[in-house]
Image (cartoon, rainbow, N blue to C red):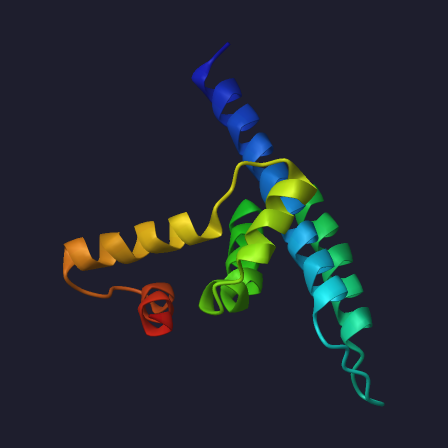
Length: 128
């Protein structure tokens, strides 16, 4: 097997993982958040559209976008230290994931560099 084939298989596996994580996160929001329903906005419809868009982005191979969506959708759970959410992800996806571990690893890298170099890093530090 060539390096190119291995890289493609690895990317496809990672793409599937992030699709599954984003969908599970959306389902968590649907099940656990307060519902908002006004004439202009319905939170259930919003999350259902996000699930559809997630599938489309998966089909198009948009790994970077799915990673960003996962990061954005889990921000509230990280800020609130929602340990129930972390367990939910593990149960729902069967992936050995710890959203708090990766968060603190990102913070440690920023500390080691001694400076913030991106908006995402600013947001991570701002949470603390």
